[in-house]
Image: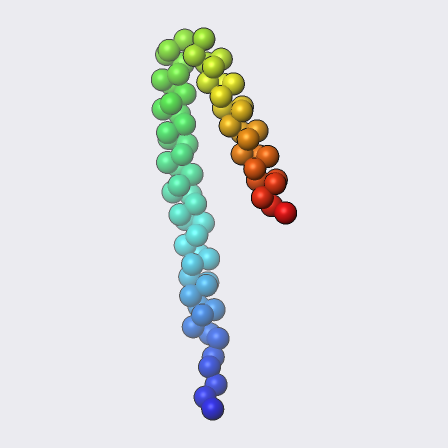
Length: 73
């Protein structure tokens, strides 16, 4: 019987563990850039659009939070 060492799998997980925060940072930077650009465009459109956008954003945040809590258990 040949012993199979778990070291290659452990090494692969470690490499992915090092890369994962980098990709999260890249995705976060793109999300932040899009958010800044969209807020700038929204501010130029005026206060009535800002109110509607804030209400839609608040509803989306609340909905995602509720879904996250329900799907967690």
